Image (cartoon, rainbow, N blue to C red; front, side, top):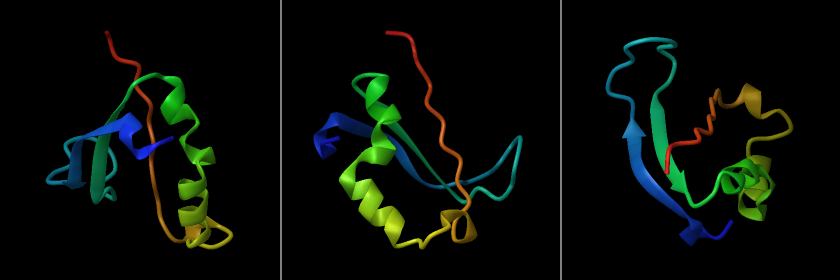
Length: 73
């Protein structure tokens, strides 16, 4: 994924959790050109390199939720 292929809609600390886990502290909404692009995100070399910095088990360092939503055209 080239950095120009995604548009950051909003990114920042979570102001208030209305429903669900209160553990979430930071959130981002990113728009991609196609459904396939975010699906292949974890294979991108930049992401793989960044993930290595978290060690062998990333879940011991960070708790994350990632969702892909297919919106209407």
